[in-house]
Length: 326
Image (cartoon, rainbow, N blue to C red):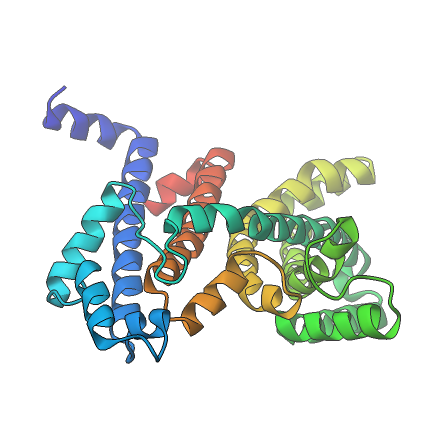
């Protein structure tokens, strides 16, 4: 098929244009992310080879190691070599352990992914029903005390950073009460505190958004028509109101999942969780540039792919969005 034929086909199919735009945008975002990770690390003052070998290492050994790693080359040469290695799947070698960066990330990524997925599931399971129930209860300005209590409590919880929630939970349930482990990954009960710390603020914010979206849907004409037809309440809410309210909040849910993944950096260090977050901080302190770059790329790719997945899901649920966007 010729290029003109592909272009003509794309003009007639919004889905093809949508997929092409999303694919191009993802490639550009990945390139920007990789470039930012490279520059962020290489423009920071300090000698990573000296930090890895120690202050007492002979200068000749440090120079030889720096030359072996290519750190004596011009910055542009290092940048092009870095991009070339990424394209071939070579993420480099850790300066401190000598292990491939892909192995280091592969060992730590499952623990971080478990926390993020469990926290997201916990937040959605609690926040969506809470937001929908509060919208139904406070619809039309009814029950003002319940509305004020909900908005005040959710606003306070949403404003507290994850690491402060983690510190508070560890102190209360780990140190004072002794009900749960204070650190490490050792059994199902060790997941409770980090998952709650990660899920609290995003869950509160999601509940507020779900309530607002649901109130808008409940004021829509088709909901009034459904009530005028005297349809059962569960049909009005579950068949007409809930799907439209949830579709509108899916984009926010994707952003919250990305925020949860980023929040694992601090929470993992509070509870000594053996994931990417603790590896990221220890690698920064050791100036282990290849590992830091690899972890930054993994976190960034996680956010980009999550956003892409939600965009595709929204386009599938509501094909009109692809047409409106075009």
